[in-house]
Length: 276
Image (cartoon, rainbow, N blue to C red; front, side):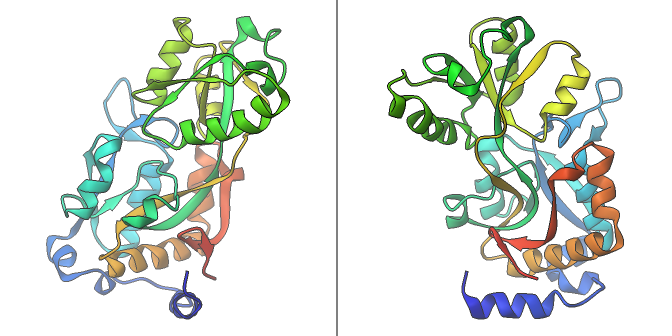
């Protein structure tokens, strides 16, 4: 990130209040911001099975940010692989759906990062004695969502921890989503699964005595709110709104409500870099 740009952002984020005037006129006039989500990733975004209501940390944080900006948030369900094109073509204003901030995605998007995360292996408890450490997975078939970073991260981990020591590489089994990968695991089609560490405590609480974790997260990544690179004013308004929520404690309260406060950031980050 350009140092001059960072300095400008730091100075700009020195404000302690956010007003709707920071948003583009089209959003102010509409009184709403359209946000892409795929609600299949608890506790970040999911639907209450009884009511169909959207819930989760991303949902609560998205609503709090929109309120701070003086607009309403309108969620639009979007397939994860279509989210980048949806925001770059203007069909939605923002992506807020457990998306990792990566250099590749920064070719099309800017990110306001709001949480740290990492991929982690897990399996069913019936195989707990078989997989005592992550390297016990070498040569095994591992399920993971094909539209996430997990396949690339797992291949890199395998090269460093399996092939380098003469063990067979893991076999990647790409799925439509993390929920699909979990189904494949329960049905015995894969030996283990990779999923974001922020989601696993929720899943293990919902399905008690079903899964166990294998090691620690094997990579670090920031989760970010995504914006088209042309929409600088929207990005900056969200960054300032997030700063306010961090300072007044609402940000940590939202993450704590989902049991993921430990993954909170200590400051506003943009495109992976701290800006205050």
